[in-house]
Each structure stands twice: as structure tokens, then as C-alpha cells.
Amino acid sequence: MKLTSVKENHLYSKAYAKGKKYVGRYVVIYVLRDTHAGLLKKSHPLKIAVNRIGLTVTKKIGGAVVRNRCKRIIREAYRLTDRESAIRRGHIIIIVARDAAVNAKMQMIKSDIEAAMKKLQMISPRTDRYGV
Image (tube, rainbow, N blue to C red; front, side):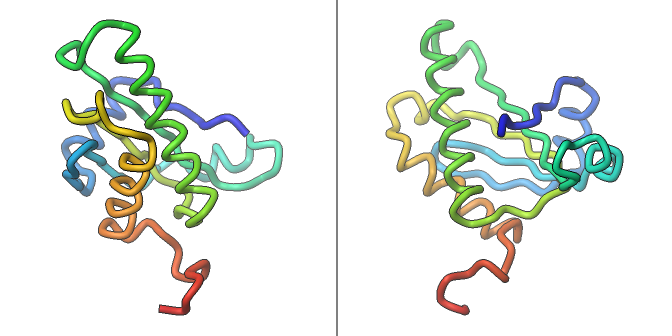
């Protein structure tokens, strides 16, 4: 299933101002509870809550090819983390790429996203494999 994206600028601003923040080596992640999660759940074909994901990669990182590659890698790392760790639903998640993300492998960015989700308490405890 395709990720639901954040398209409105005011949602980015709100997440930056009021959201919880994690600064990693490759990405900075902002998480904010989505007030419209109920409406999105009703409109979803499977009637499940979803996260809205926003990706930010600035021109400082590089040209269009570099920025798009960086976004693809971050999107895939998030998708794998969600599939393996079951990230909590009903949030706005903004992922900002840092300069180090350009040369990073997908597994390094994935481990950064996993650490962020654990620190921000976004990984559901029910899916923990080892019962910790």
C-alpha cells in the first residue's frame, strides 16, 4: 500500500513547532498526533488508521537526482521499519534528511529511523519479538 503523504505546509509547520523531535546521524524526525486520523480511517479502503509521512530534502544536499535518490531510500527504510516493527498509527511523521544521508546506505538510515521510533515511543510494545 502506498504511503499517505503530507501535502499542506501548515502541517509541516505544526509538526516542527509542536511535535516531538529526534535528531539522528542521518535524519531528523518530528512526530505529532494527527487530529484528522479518524476521518482518514473512515476513508481508507481497509478502515485502518494511517500515518501521514512528509519528507524534506533541501537543496543543500544536492541536485534533483541526489535529492530524489535520498527520498527513495528514506521512504523504503521507513516502509521496512513499519513492516518489521509496527509503528503506531494516527500520527503525522516528518522526516528531514541530513547531509550524511547522501552517502548512507539504506540499512544505516533504517537503523536511524528505528532508533528514533523507539526513542519517540512510536513502536507498539505488543509486537516486540522478545517480550522486553
